Image (cartoon, rainbow, N blue to C red):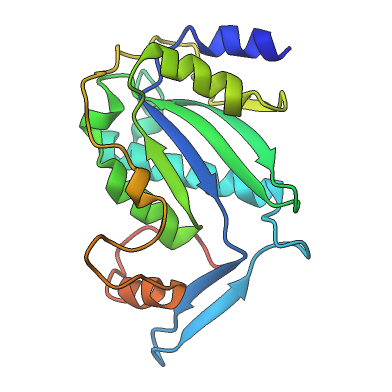
Length: 210
């Protein structure tokens, strides 16, 4: 089965590799008191419930689609970006995702800022990496190593409905230094500082607290 998944996914160019994890708590700022609060949103082992994780991932994708194609992206001919996602559990039982993302109209890396969306996921859910493949071989290796590791693969409804544009494999900065919180040359961020930084962004679409 694993070889079958790898063969299928290898037929479609991938623009972005995503590794997405979940921190045990959601930090937010009370607008009335300014106090930073924490909400436990995971099970007893510290893992996000698979259904909640799936909703979080789809919320992430929806926000990207809204940025690129507007609020009615779902009614467009392409149905937004397409994705294939593998679900994996750490040895301690905590869940994370590996995913391939592609846009219908251009290389996704030209349409979005990977760094901005890396920051978005970090604020909302936890550590992550959003990488650009350097070759189609990169895509095949990523699929074999991560996405189909356990044979548990989910797809967007529009996966396979169209073939993504060929990605631009020209050299671009990778996200190696972005995996951990904090910008180069600045003080390391904490979850509390992330929450405080969001206090002034009331119009931003964020994950529901409950």
